[in-house]
Length: 432
Image (cartoon, rainbow, N blue to C red; front, side, top):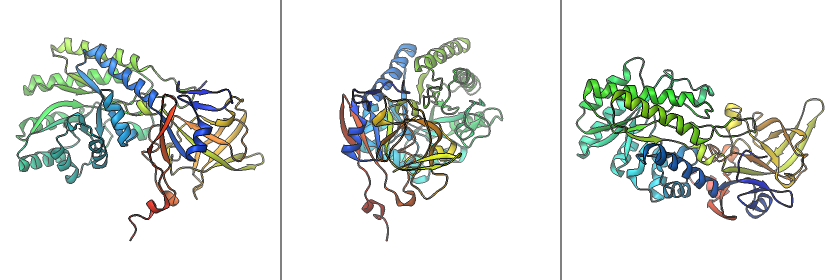
């Protein structure tokens, strides 16, 4: 019935998440409200960890891509389940370290790291910095030399694979702002420079072909391409690498029609390609890393709103206004992302009312979903938007000087606040 197995309907006809009544949560904490299921997050982490143990004998790890949802508590939860952490900014690194994450298990990504961020990563002793371009390699070498250290790095490679996803979230093809291209020889020359450098140690390769991918074949092809390059580096430069990060991008369900593939199926097919390629080239299987982000937290989260004005334009559409909008979920405005919406206090009733969910921002494009089917709404109802655990809080803003909502975590039917809602005082804190 629902896009996530942590959701259900109770005897009152209310939507529940991990055993908690969402209507009661809205009454207790107010709306808008982000709600996350710790039970679902931990279960997904364990499935990914089990796949590494099963297919690679534990030689490697899942890495949580924290850009999907970054706060101290999520860092604690995923690392307690044996995952490493990927960060893409100094702020995400600071959050992870503040949560007590061991820096050795943090991997620093990003395509335009500042000098300050590189220095922070090196001083913190992160597991590796994933190098995106030659000028960045030079900066890392220079800073490492000044500090008298050798910094572990990986190289981000564009394997030339089109993942058939939205153009904004494709990252593996040649026309991408990320990484070094294989087709042009750029990647090999960059590796050559890294091998020559005195104050960096090249330990591995990294690729990421895109996000929200439902087809297994691009991941299989990426593994084959990366291991062929891995072998070329060893054959021509004599450099034996130890790590291979195959990225993330595994699709989740936003709508019932989304043909999400079980994570284990991705892992099974990719591991077969890894083993076959290593056997073909006579390589020792490197440590294998994957970088799920959205698929760990996406389906584990929902957002709750209170329905406000309902405006019907005859023979055009009906707008159902909510007390949130693009400031707490900009994804529809950015790239028309699909969502499942429902009236949480009548979740057991048929969704037979066509509505356009409108936010409160002073912006015509402030919509959450258009022409979607929900239960017939009334002012004061609680509207739930499902699968909002990824890239909602992370991308939230204070547009129109709205305050960012609180986030509560649910575990074993109990709720707790993990991010306090902002206040108006927070909005002016840095004003002079």
